[in-house]
Image (tube, rainbow, N blue to C red; front, side, top):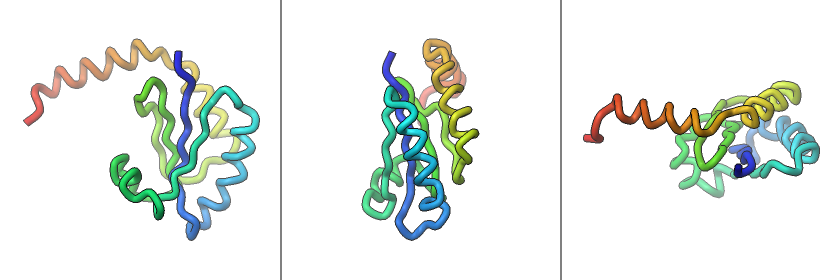
Length: 110
């Protein structure tokens, strides 16, 4: 299985983003098997728009190119560890089945 990817959407002027940065970096050091990335929403506006980022900081977690967690706000270290544990525990085959069921229920795209 592919490793989880955690993305911190942030901006240099954002005080909560700056406060969250050391938590994100320390957590990254504890989990070398996970890819941790930061997206500066000022420099990468197209990426932020693509993911619908409306407030920062926003943390997104991807597994197998699927967003499995997205939440705005700086997380304390313990909550970030819980998110990582939950992401690792996901059955991605079940997640894909749920997505397929939702897409089928929605019908063809207009």
